[in-house]
Length: 171
Length: 290
Image (cartoon, rainbow over all chains, first blue to last red; front, side):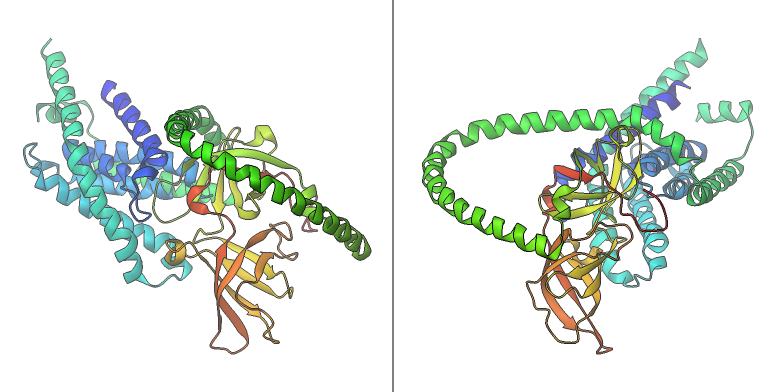
């Protein structure tokens, strides 16, 4: 329970930073996607359920404030991404940095593509190549760069939580 | 790993069922919000008491910090500027007299045509921008006023002397504004000089260059030229008439040889919006009461 509450608080802080401070570090109108990093990281660190839980909150925050009249769209995408990353839980080793980078990068590309299809392609904005090269790809690369910094913090959080839970189990 | 095994003993609902349940829940919420107000109403209150206060606080801190830095930097600049400004004041006061004369003439002419200067009569509420859309696809931002200050969905938002956008969602102390450069924004508008109507729509591809697209401009006499002002039209059902959107920067004839399209430079600098004005009057489109 404590883990869940702390996770929600982390998502909350990340979301607020994403909406305010991150705009200052945007490069060419592109900002990194913290929500994907959180959803994906908790997904492959702790499995499907945890991924879905984090994805749900990441999505619902975005939906409430910026859903533009369709609450649930972001939530749906993030829940699926959390689930998808949870499938790779068995392959996760904390020491390996390549694995999270690849997974988070791919997650962000998938997120960008799905979001493009649902909100742009359906309004007959057909120029897939342009949007991929100018929005989706830069966002994924920027997100990966931020991942390298933030991943250590998430790993630290994860290890501390696990340690405490183990201690409590023994008592 | 030990933790995972422990968890499995406690309850055994497989992840894919949870996924299915959440998926159905999300789709249900989407349908509900699309057709009714049942979900977004209560949720907007949640946002009002959690996210919005912190975002406004962060913004205030940022602004104060910036002010301090600016203070140090600008002291010298201010002194030299002061001199230049004093000279300018003299020039301007003379110019002002000329303008006042012009203004009298203008009001007289307006009375002749029985046109009220409606735009300046609108009641407005000032608001601060406290957050931006977290993604990279749309250009939606958050302001710190809401229903408590009389704001409603579909109210027009301006900054300086140009149209910024329209309110799409509103909570007790926050509202989201879809700006006119947003890819999903469409504004019915017209060329001020000729009253030819056209459609101004944001385009993500042009966002970087700071321009907006317009099309369906019917201009048989070739009277519209680059540099003409484009304003919101009086036949739009959401935007109040005669608010400046921007100035034409390029103009092309469409393949059908009947209409024209092109790009325009918005009158508002969308990269540096900090405060906006919300016009607290809704367009009376005839079908519904205000």
